[in-house]
Image 1 (cartoon, rainbow, N blue to C red):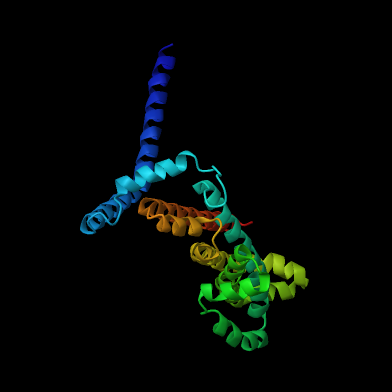
Image 2: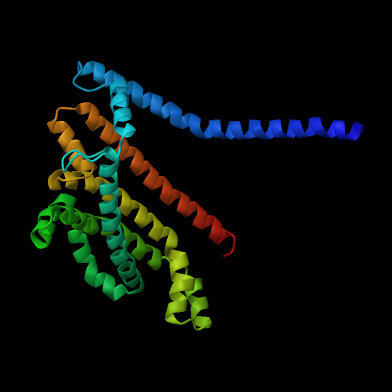
Amino acid sequence: MAQMIDVIPRREHSALTSMRYWLKMIWQTLSPIIIGMLILASLWQVAAWISAGALPTPFATASTLGELLRDPFYDNGPNDKGIGIQLLASLGRVFTGWGIGIAIAIPLGMLLGSSAALRKMLAPVIEILRPVSPLAWYPLGLAVLHNAPKAVVFAIVITSLWPTLVNTTMGVQNIPADLKAVSKVFRFSRWRYVSKVLLPAAFPAILTGMRLSMGIAWMVIVAGEMLAGGTGLGFFVWDSWNALSLERVMSAILIIGITGLCLDRGFSFVGQRMAAWQEGGH
């Protein structure tokens, strides 16, 4: 009986210690973010004061953002849709364009990384096309596809292609020579070499390229939708500006930024998990 009474306080102490540990970890993780957000809000408030009311305050924007999020999926016609519908429209175009872009970039990058002759041939073409502004591709897409939303997707395909292409090429080029030698010694087939050597060794570089491509795609979509109209966060920003509602504009900017952060953190999480998986010997 005395032993049971002694065990209960120990368990309570262990649970309390564990709770304190997790609270400390959560605070260490969140405190820099909270401080950063407070600094941003303070600078924003100062800018609103300096602009003499031209720029909405964080509190006014938060109120408007709350109203937008209260019913994000309403649909009152072509030019009056909820912010949730606008966000989903933008994400759909981004993932479509980005997906097509990386589907082209990864195989082509693997070929370029494996062939010096092919790199010499295509490097000038890539360097000519890569610096072209994303919006410069929109009129070409519109001329070919005769559809404004599809033209935006076309611009995303072209501009999100380059980071993944370049990083995949570099990743394949930098595969350690000993890995290549092992594959020759064991006479790997081409498919076995690609699946067991090339892709695992080049994956970190490929993932970095995909992450950069997504960042570019998410930036391009807003400007593209301002031109295309219809639906999407870019259209929502432009429509709100025309309605002289800067609170809605700032709310949309916050949503764009938070969504971009979530996408980037998603790639970071995948990269960390893949690194842990590879270190585990899989």
